[in-house]
Image (tube, one colour):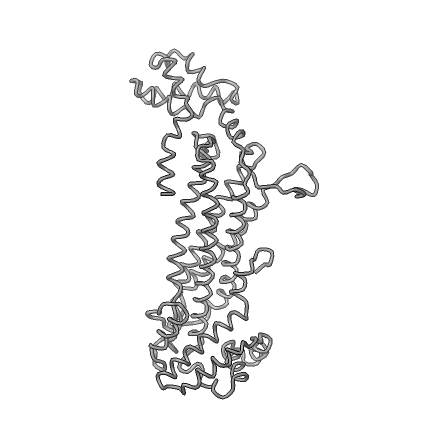
Length: 436
């Protein structure tokens, strides 16, 4: 975790104090249920909760010191609790194995992280929708291969992003539900030394569902799916960030990141206004996606368990969620404050002499009886003259002066094909599909 790219609420989920607090709650709930079943004295669970009610400060340094001797984190924690609670603490962890605590805790942490990420997505979606509605009919050039294609609106660009992040939200909701499972099944997951009702009780208390078959660990296909979804969200962030970066290029300059008073773009060139936020988002997306392959490789553990996944998850759990949380918040700010330049968009639309209307003329010629091959040839030969003149010539005027073209279409029919608004007749339909 890099503090520069971290926000407090998400970071808190992964702090040692939070981890140990969750460990304690799992152990105390399990002990409480075991007391109800008569496996341990009912006083054991009460002793744990009474101690916890005094709001003890978890001494991370003390636990770490014990672990330095035991070389086992769960044992170190249990030892520290016993030193503070007293004799009743010996009934903790009855019939349980370390993975019961560790895996259930990770499920809780990822569930809580997902809740924050879903809030982030809601804020981003709201920002995108606002800009989409603001620029619903703002004409701009659509590009394929980075080359001028046909007109679109800036609102449609935003609507596309809204639909994409709506899908991201749906995927994350599913992944959150799938990851939030509890395993309190003991060594190799057979419940030989602990009743399944303990698992059900802990799951209910901690807001989780029961893992149907946990071996000695919760199956890692769940985690692979979760981190894969985070990777897809990161890719969607990068896609929108790259769009902004392109639009901010000097040669394009149709939109740009907000540049605040006193902000400096370059240590050497005072004129620079660089897309630093969206470039940063491109980099952060790579970090989040970096968790997906290790998570998938964690699926193949030996037999009922090994710990090859453990070290990986100590990195990717905090790093991916903290980074994605920061990235979503940063992108929301970029979209909210994005400077949009409709006049420059129109200027870019016009700069290539009407080439963006070539398809409409092509279709009109075919409908007037010209073969598609001949129609394409007629339009292209005039379009290439405009292209090679860098937009100095007008496609409309060249077509009106082309006798083969005018043999099929009148001047009025050709002019009608250069109507910009024609391209936006279905914007309402698209918006209705996206926003309902």
